[in-house]
Image (tube, rainbow, N blue to C red; front, side, top):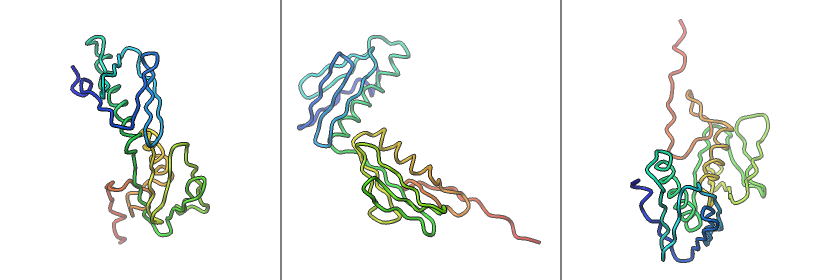
Length: 180
């Protein structure tokens, strides 16, 4: 069996999980509500304070879906209890982010400012003008929003200017060799 897939998912206090039609999972908690349809082949069972995922056979497709399904449900539980965050850093002269009611206003060295509108369930903040915090309960959406903001001006290898994840290492290149 899958080591990840066979591990039961603990349901903390204050979180309710409902399984409808055998493959639609709804998780409600203090940070919101998430719903996901899992593959029909996976069987979900809720006993006491745990949810378990079982697979019907040892086919390679069922094996791969087993651990995935369990991890997706575990991420939903973690999202509605703690939430997920991604930190981004802006590096460059004049690069800054400002919080607006709709999301963020970014100055990234272009001739115009960029207005990034936050999707539903995501909160964007800029505690420091050169730092962006993306917070939400859905791990996939938090990661996607962070990737979209980073793609507006990815870090370049010569001076390292751009938007990068906190802790990301940008490989630097040497510039032109000197003249004559």
